[in-house]
Amino acid sequence: MKYINQFTSAVLLFCFLGCKTDKKANLDLAESQHKEEAKTPFVWEAANVYFLLTDRFNNGDKTNDVNYNRNKEAAVLRGFEGGDLKGITQKIEEGYFSNLGINAIWMSPIVEQIHGGTDEGTGITYGFHGYWTKDWTNIDANLGTKEDLQNLVDAAHKKGIRVLLDAVINHTGPVTDKDPVWPNDWVRTGPQCDYKNFENTVTCTLVKNLPDIKTESNEAVDLPPQLVEKWKAEGRYEEEMAELDAFFEANDYPRAPRFYIMKWLSDYVRDFGIDGYRVDTVKHTEAYVWREFKDVCDNAFAEFKQQNPNKVLDDTNFYMVGEVYNYSISAGKAFDFGDKKVNYFDDAFNSLINFEFKWNAAQQSYEEQFKNYDSILNSNLKDYGVLNYLTSHDDGQPFDKNREKTFETATRLLLSPGAAQIYYGDESARDLTIEGTVGDATLRSFMNWEELPQKQDLLIHWQKLGQFRSKHPAVGAGKHKMISESPYVFSRSYNNNDFKDEVIIGLEIPKGEHSINVFSVFKDGQQVKDFYSGETFKVTNGTITINVDFNIILIEKQQ
Image 1 (cartoon, rainbow, N blue to C red):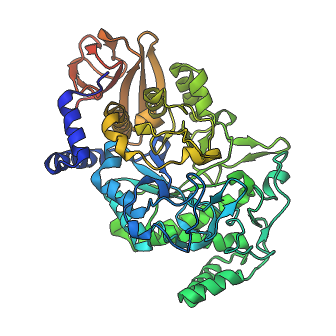
Image 2: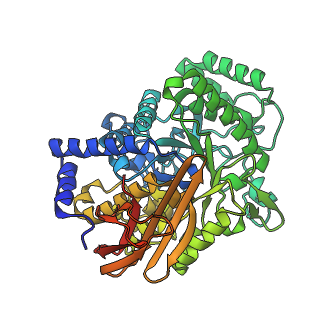
Image 3: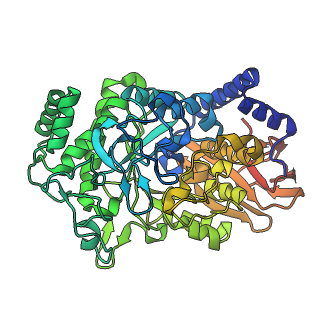
């Protein structure tokens, strides 16, 4: 099946292979599209979020591939593989994300990781994934420098793309021969969580040898001696201490462990202008911690905007999306621990990751899922949102592990109400079953750039849907209404102040000529366009007549 005409497909293929003239034309087209989209407000509830593991996406600087004497041979896919901030910036500037319709990039944590590796009997594992922090104030040398981060954020913002970093507050990295445990007034090393109730999910260590930050403590603590020694060796102890003193004096917070970490994480907002945080392991920390963190980040974002008026994209607020593992949209605002229900939305998170989405996708029709999500997002979760996904870095049961439903994955994810999280390689059918891996390592292979020339039909399908979704907030944040069951056609409408957006979408439409009812959205005589095929039509007697080649139509007002 072809998803674009042969000429356009050839241009895209040549661009990928390095044809400078065609590549420039394609990027000019993407830039032109971005300028057109600038009139459309950005809506987090409808965002197209591209999630990537920083170390596994693109190697832009091979000189930083090995640091901190991390030179032991690791188990399969459990060591650093060279991906870095420069590599992501390269793809931003090439237009890769823009062509996918991406308007937000979420990167796995970039802070300095433990220097040693762990070995639980399956071989050495280094902190390539970013969740094993050694020093929140520094970027891991394998991933780049603060200048690299600034260049990435600036490049993304130039393309109208927001940047989400990944925040870890509730634990340090594991203890190794190079990474001593933090002091007892900072962390607990037991008991290990058994997840049977609230207490045994929060006041415990997630897994063995992962020291848990005492986020509940309000007792003042000194800096860990290993951090003091490190900063002095790096020549920045006085500067860091002066900043900490100023932070605590200005905010009147106790010098408790969680507020140190909040200060360090908010510096990435204040100094670089990142647009939001995806927050890790939310349910393993007291709910009030996240309200405090939101306040700290909001203040840092306001400070950045005040000091950098020329870098402000718009008046969108700082965004926080939380990973409450196993949270489901059907639960509304409450997560049930068994003995206690907790609301993580109010005054804290704008959105939570929706772990239910893949099960709904597997068991429900499009209309069943779309109608249900529309109902919840416009009632229990009104003014909030969910981030849907079908593949991730730590979900061992993805929707399509064998990559047999790659087109459906795009269609289901990108046309559902809510924000959409594309996991790197979803658009290129990156292999999720790597031989020799243990556990979630199989989900974390390097991006399969070399296979893209053979995956053009799939890639273009993702691009078409992603660009349409990015162009129309109604797709993710609008009101859903079925127009006809057979063929399956529905509308989405979004209204916010003076902005109005309406589209009509048809799915699983048999090939051939069809008369599509559009009168609920478009008037007689109006010119409309099928974004998927590129064809234009005139509305006559409330309908358009379209010869469907691709089983899908994306109808918008002709610009």
